[in-house]
Image 1 (cartoon, rainbow over the protein chains, first blue to last red):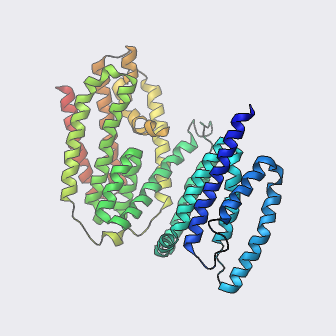
Image 2: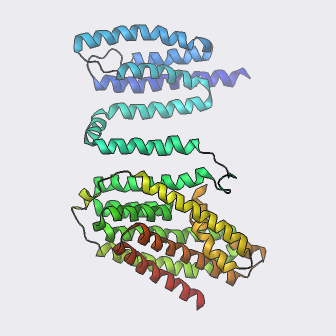
Length: 351
Length: 63
């Protein structure tokens, strides 16, 4: 029983050493204002973390405090002698102790430690790239990013993920997900437009958006167009492409649910896909490359139209539920007509 | 729809027509959204493009 633990423990110590060496090498290479910890010190930090976690797990905080003393002294000395108050190396040191502890904590911990170690090293070494990027971001974009983070990472998890009686059986998180898609695609279109140009940026949003949600793509593209009417040509390409992606997706769904039906369905849906792709190609070729479109997409993020659409989406969902109850299975075509709005386009990306 | 056909509740022909109608309804919804939220120019373009696609789909099913 003990052997595998000892075996893996030794391995985990080497893992900790490796992660420490990775971060340490980067720090030494960076040479940012007086190196007080580099390719030898960082592996030591990681090993301290690993040993403490493996044998004295309750003393982890003590070890950390003990380490912060020399670190603080070194940091103060660096700040005084070099006039550099950057906290990166100190922070990286503390993180390395934790990463070392993680490697011996559990299998999952070891995986997380390797992942974070790698990401952190990349992050540290891309200092100039990141700073240059941040310099390019203006005030409105900063605020837009914050709002988007709020929409995705704060509001979405807060909403209950179940059908609520108060909302006539609607799932608030599912509806908010649509708001997230619309704002996200709109934001994505803005970023792509700024980085690869308006025509290609909007076109790419349509192609990628079709796989997420064709309805959300349509809404965000239409919203962008009402803001900047000049983009209507390339915007229509995006909407058409996003809509067409749904046909092969429906085919996949049929293949999963009822394979025997596939041969019958593949002809009409295949024809629609081919025709749609051809029309989209014409639309792309026909759309002019307007250079001043770039300045037209001013607002990176607008919540209000997305919220409005979320409300409409909720109403449509309720309507299709009602239609289903009224028509039942007898009026199969009528049901098909009402159903897809919510079901065909949303079910596949709801899970 | 395809599940109903698999269970034998509806014939494969009816199921196929139902799925195509569903797909068309879905694309027409996109055209409606383009009119509603976007501009007239956008709405017209999307409606023409997806209208052609829908007509082709219907024609193939009826043939």
